[in-house]
Length: 70
Image 1: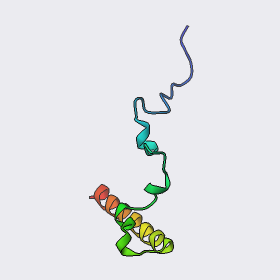
Image 2 (image 1 turned 120 degrees about the vertical axis):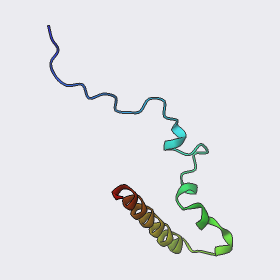
Image 3 (image 1 turned 120 degrees about the horizontal axis):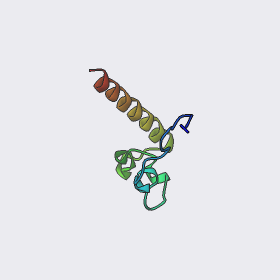
Image 4 (image 1 turned 90 degrees about the vertical axis):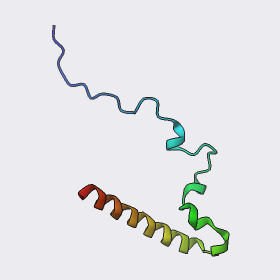
């Protein structure tokens, strides 16, 4: 008897290290900002860091879009 229906395949990649998903030291807040923004000599407030982080993410997205379109 033949099977009916569909096979969707695995829902997760096999063998992906969990450090890709979650930092090894379990500190999620340390990876919230781009590493250059955490320099204490910049004296940035949290609001400034949030604004700059958003700008970095937007520029990165534009660069990826430009790369994928070209």
